Length: 276
Image (tube, rainbow, N blue to C red; front, side, top):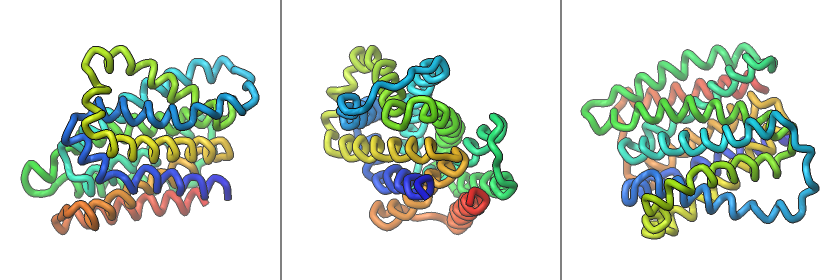
């Protein structure tokens, strides 16, 4: 039950503010939003270090934590580029296939993954193809970086689970996001990312708080396991993001794109059932 509740909380945290995120990225660029939001989220959770018992630092966690931190920056950069160039209602469901990627990686790592999860992956691919085949450049824009983001985030979700198992959810979050901030800092100072992020400070802050809470919720879910369940549930953010984009962001879709989004949602739902 903990895995289900916190996995869905992660989906809401990552999906609900997608339209606000897209507006910020389109105004100041991807990297300033990446830097500002990750830093805000890390600072939000940093006080946990004062109350948590020191963990038993494992070699695995110390190797994977910085790696996942760097991948977090890469994954967000690719995802935010897709939001900059494409429609939220198109790219969010594509990125949401990260849950299937994470499930496959968990299976390869020895976790027992239900066959329904594997059955949902081909459907997700079909849905992505339909979503990316809208008429004109606007509907196809952002598809390639969204696919890159889905692959990278699948790895992030899969590798976050063993870190959480070794350190607990709180220290896993602090290690991963602290490493991400450290990796970004030299570049951010060189390009003035903080100054640019301040131009859209309230949108960056909304996303930073929501993302920090969402990733922490995901780490809690993955710590309780299985990671494949946590990843697939968190991937429901694509459905949340698409609904918010159409309802509040004024985006419109062609019929086959609607079908594609529905198929992606069906695929994620099948994988959730297989995780059940």
